[in-house]
Length: 219
Image 1 (cartoon, helix red, strand yellow):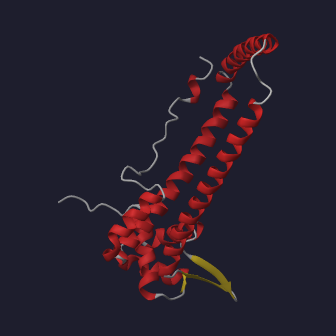
Image 2 (image 1 turned 120 degrees about the vertical axis):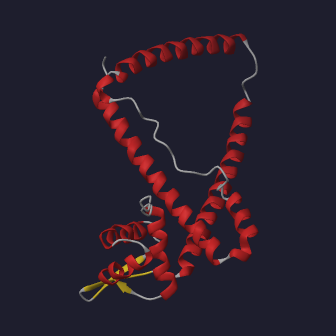
């Protein structure tokens, strides 16, 4: 008989959210640690799971007197999804506005730039300078590739960005699962909303691409 597979972090987060949504009540951490095993989440991992939900604004917490209470209402998840959608709409509007401004600037810059011998000569000199600049930049890049400190900084920055992206991917999957469970009759509307905000069928976790070991730098 095969050993039962443990719950993933996403599944644990969903189980803990169910405790909040089903009761719509306020809980102390020790109460959640008692309720967690009933949902399949072991007591030792409840604290970390709850904290991850608090970090992603899916669960609220506040100190009342000497006790810290946690709570989350079903409307919180829906509100967060709507906030994400509204932010994306705002970003799209800003991008369109910026594009229009750049087109206007481009048209304005074209004025007074009619073809002439002086302009052709200046462009040729500019091209020569750009080529020299690129050569120097490539040469500097070769030295940077052999700098262990630069490589380590790049590696750490990549790890931070990778972890943050996958944490938000977890968050989005949790929201989608909750919406599917609680609004099965609105499946088509939800799928349409997901596509509008860029959550397509190929949406998935990111895989780390930084695989070059530090020991190879400088070889």
